[in-house]
Length: 438
Image 1: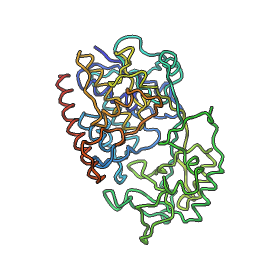
Image 2: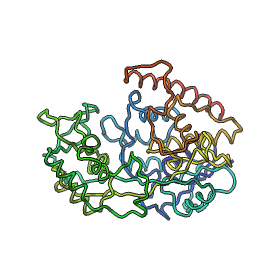
Image 3: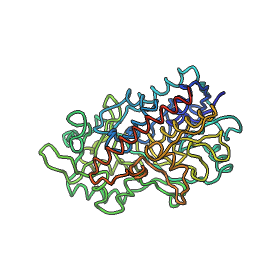
């Protein structure tokens, strides 16, 4: 039996690798390099478009960190690649984009049970087992076919942050430190402080800067997790100081806390490029150069990539999908990735693994895995399949986990207990899944 996987992003590669690792032949179909989406440029698979950060790596203090550990215990290809390509990022797991994609691409192309095909899929597969993981930028023909056959398509706009060259940063106007002293060394983030006067001038310029035209821009539904910095700034002069420019937990070379701080994170292992953390934007390119260069450390910044904003599409999944990510009206067809209504790199990859597990179990004639809200994986599976009149994309967070039986006031202890319970449960589920697929 062969499974067709459409799309070689994080979710598609995770799905293909899990299936092949469990003896299932896979036909992985990807449109690149014959045809690219507006946001993609690399010929490699699992291309990271918006950021090079996979967010927190704290297993016992952060829900996304816990999700990563659950995925590791399920044999995640994404987590293997991230470990091989990681760059310093304090308590976060950030990667060299090219090294990360290279790793995934090699693993996929070298696997004897995976056939890779370069072609554009313009319609949902009509027969056999298939996993559709074409991402939030699904090409128009397939997106139209999905909308026509399934309905319930929604959309929001996503924004990517700029990248500057390291050689153009004025490091005399920066200090290196991780928030609250987290990290492996003296500091993985380059911090660009601003005085009150510099900050207020920056916010004023940001609010009045010219934005790029986006079709149906005024009708969009912008997801809060990817809110452009200029929209955040328009909500109030101090909004950025409580968001991406917050100074809490950071102290300069004189031991003083700045009024506001932009953090820069390494974009690659060589440290030749830095990402403006949290600075997703839809400003026109000349305006990005003008306004962001008002930050003292970036006054001569060379922009290797400007921020961009693009359309993201996702399904009204609770109306369409089961908890194993299969289509209710056609259980042999699965969906995975951000188009199912999970939000974030790690969450997208996790959904690819969950869809592959569901598909593999159905191929074997076995019942679906018993996912529940004690694990982050299970919580995401329930999120996309539980009726919800106001369905929106969801990140990994503690709010979607099943509460502990005993009320715990200590937040750190509560998070640790939730993680310990989740990892115990994922161990049980992993053993059950492996037993069913052996």
